[in-house]
Image (cartoon, helix red, strand yellow):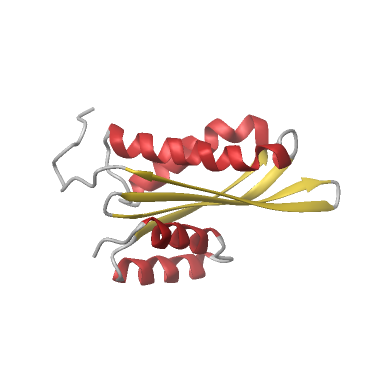
Length: 148
């Protein structure tokens, strides 16, 4: 069953909000049972210095967990959605340390990326969420793959 952008975006948000690895794995299984592939990854550091690494980690995690395939459609969709989500929180986080979770959810052609983070300034923390959606063809295994 293919889900639409609203359902996929909601799944990415829910994954990003999980507090423990156990919660994350339970939700991942529940989503898989309804046809949604998902992954989450933690990150932290200086926001400006880590934006590129966050995008790279999103792509690597999504490929490792079979949320996306090894092709430029999927990689570009995840990179673009991650960059868009980062852009939504740029004004709050630029120049500060951040820590949080990035989650990716997919069903069919719909891919959503959610970034949930705490922004540290002394002992005063701010919270931000960035969310973006992209469409990339969900090729059957073996089609649309890039050989490396």
